Structure formats: C-alpha cells, structure tokens
Length: 370
Image 1: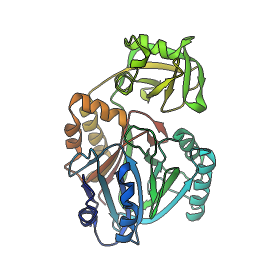
Image 2: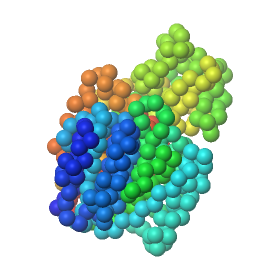
Image 3: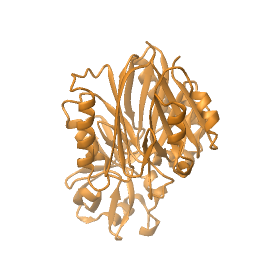
C-alpha cells in the first residue's frame, strides 16, 4: 500500500495508529518528545502492530507531512511492498563503553543476517543511539566492519536541550543508554545523503591541545580555546558563550569540497570548549558562514530526484542547532513545507549519522517506487 506517515502534537496514539495502519506492516519508525516516555509509546505501537519491528528515538521537536512538531510524536510505516526482510538488535551500555556495545550489536546483526554477502543497493541500515554517548565511536565500528557492507543512516536521540536523558526503543523496550541497529532488505530503490548549508569563511585555526575522548579542545593556536573563540566571534564575556552563539558561529573541518561541521556544546572550566564530536590536536578548523538553509533543503530533494524517478517517502535527521537557526530566521514552517508534499517524518537530533557522526547537518533517506 505504500509508505504511510502520521503525527500528533498531543498524545493521541489512537489517531496516530490509524494514520499509519496498513496490511502487512514490516517496520515502524517513530520519533517522540522525551516527556512522552510516561505514556509508553513503544508498547502502544507494538500492541497495535505485533508482527512489525518498531524502532524509535526521542527528539527535540519533529517534522512531518501533517506539520511541524514542537512537541509530539511522528511515525512512518513500511509494508511488505517496500521491505522484504528485517533484522534488528538493541544493545545497552553505550555511555560507559560505546565500542563494546557497538561490537555486540554488530556481531548479533551479522549472525541474524546469516553472514550473507550484502549488496548495498538492496540493503539499508538505520542506526539510532543515546545522544549523550560518543556516537563517533559507534559509527567508526560500523564503518570498519567489512561484513556489513551497507549504509547505516540515522541520528542521535535528543531531549529538550537539557542533556539529561535521551531514549531509543526497539519493540516494547525503551532505553536511556542504548543503540539500535536495523537492517532492511528493500524491494524499492532508496537514496541517502547528508547536506550542509554552511560554507567556510576566511578564518582558520589549528587545534593545539585536545582531549578527543572527552570531546574537549583546550587550546587553539596555542591559546586557551574559549577566549580564542570568543575573540574570534566578537563575544566579550565568556559567560555569554551559549547555544545561540554556538549555533550562529559554527566551526568545521574541510575535506575536499565537503564541509563537516563540528558544533560546540559548552564552556569547560572557563578555558576549554566541549564539542558534539571529537576533535584531535593538529586539526585545522574553519569558522563557517551560514548559507541558505531552505535552498539547501530544496537541493536535497533535487539531489534525490536525480537518482530516484519517483519519490514516495522521506526520513530526515536534522541537527538541533539547525532548529535554533530556523527559529531565529522564523523559517521553521518554510523548512517543513519543502517536504510536506511527500509522506515524510523527521527528528531534530543531537548528531546525524552517515558513515560518520556529523554535526549541524541534514541527513536524509529517500524512498522511491518500484
């Protein structure tokens, strides 16, 4: 019957279930505000669709065909016409040891797949994990695993920018310290990519002291990182370095013609800067300039349309800092409107995943028709 989506700004689960219901549902993907944990949405979805695999993650606001979700829940169902086989695992303990959790998930997934040879044109992976863990380590393990030769696309779960608890779910289980890996053998064509609307400016700098494990940069060009950055962006007092400043003055790494954002998280001990992704000493960073975030979203659709003759669904993972920028520009509805002619859902996340852990990007999965 095709891809179906639904969304609710209040907890109207009955209405949501009716919107995504279809015969022979194989997979349900959903995103929800973290405060909805008390309603146990994972159990309601599994009760309604007991034969489906249901995976989800908490979000900092969501996107949907029915409209922007400041708070709420969005969901997508894929049926037997779209998905042939499904393989899934959930592992916990990602905060304490992301390598161990990732390896355990990968090993279980390989076993469930029967150690088959995988054609990446036929198999699609989705990865969701605790947004307060080191996602770059998880993605590194996935990228280095030769027996899982397929794309894993996804996002880091989020809360309301409190950085207290984020959640991922598989069927009836919801975890504040988990990793979910889903592999689908697809019957329909698909396309994935990540998009950055920021461009490098003229200012560049070198990280001269860092603690990559803790995602902290201590020195830039031999000076305390916090004061160097504050001077660079014209902030006179360090205590004024907040989310709004960080979102408007991102740093990034350039590789070829690609920009990889390295978004700032917080001030550390009055002199260091914590990032949302690890950075090693010796890395050259650029101060990035904002581009047109709406044109970038339209570009994403055009990009996908060049590969897929007819789009029938989209899943978006968009960074929390992009949402702050959209709010400042009063363009939240404009962004949602770019995709609303299609069945689509999206999560505002604490990192976007495609081969590696990205910041301040839009990562998307596009589904075509047979």
